[in-house]
Image (cartoon, rainbow, N blue to C red):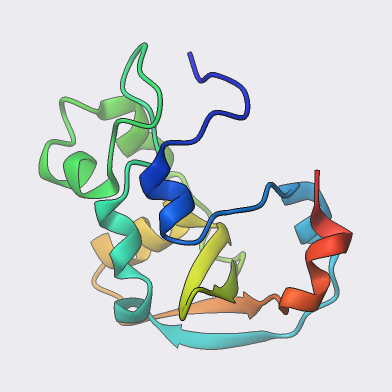
Amino acid sequence: MRRKNVKPQIIEKVGFDFNWSEKKVWKLKIPESSMPIKSLEWHFDIPFWDKQDGCYDLTPKQVLAKPMLYSAEYRRIMHADLRHPIDVMRNKRRWLILDGLHRLVKAKTLGMSYVKVRKIPRSAIPKILV
């Protein structure tokens, strides 16, 4: 079970140094654009997900390497709806995914090179904070 508001250092270090509401992000009126998956693939090495009874201890790369072992997370990936864009924000010199990691992993799995994104400006942070 995930401990509320406890993030491992690696996640804060890579740029997730504020807490936001996905629902507030979804409400923002931001146009869609396209982005190469390669610019977001670094997320695959960070433990954003949880193993059974774990907390921030599973990376997208691990799920892709052993989909049968992590079948629940793999199912979430494969059920992700690619009609929705991935919400990203530039922070600490790279694009961070605010919402849409499962969609990104699915797009990569399907062999796509580009994904639809909404580039959320840093000026929107006060509007999306929890």
